[in-house]
Image (tube, rainbow, N blue to C red; front, side):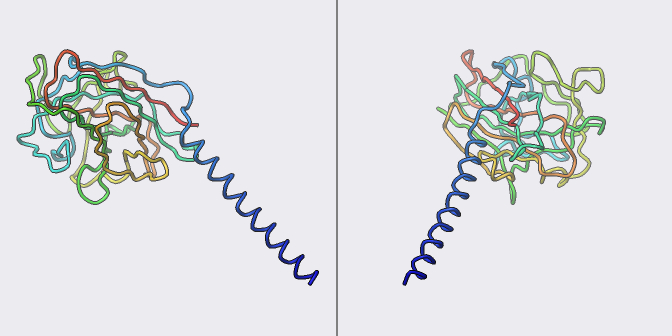
Length: 257
């Protein structure tokens, strides 16, 4: 009887130790995920004057891709800005990614976030997230939809590929490869460069998901799962609806440890 009691006590101790180990790991992971990390690489407010491209229904790629799932590249009316996040994933962190915090005011329509990846010395940007189909991901904010108003001072993008584009950042681009304060979009073929760059709301799901929300303030993450280290991420922000003088978007980017 005494032997059985010792065996039972030993099994209980082992079970407690196993539970404790898993509990410690769970707490550590969630602390890592939920912590606000380090200095901001970007901390800037953008207005309707920064929506310099449009109106259009497509994002640049090897072929025109819709700005929203199920969108019409020929008839949708969005105005677009590109924002340099001045940041890339810390590959030494538990979940490599860049954290993006946003706050909208005066949004009366849909705002779509997509991301492009840059590698220094690679001749141009060749990666973006997949908008539709298997593996699609993106982040969409909808609030008080109203008919789209025309914006003065905008310009049509010259093309959807093999094209230079400006960023809305006051400081300009992080990497001025061509001496004209722009990035160069260079996609080789349709289908390429879509499967390794992602937007996710959960760092533990690196391949991301399609998120539709009405939250005017929130957080998402950008990450790269390919085999070539990215030097920088650039957001595409597309907005439709009534874009008035009270419109603003505050963006922060940070790199988790």
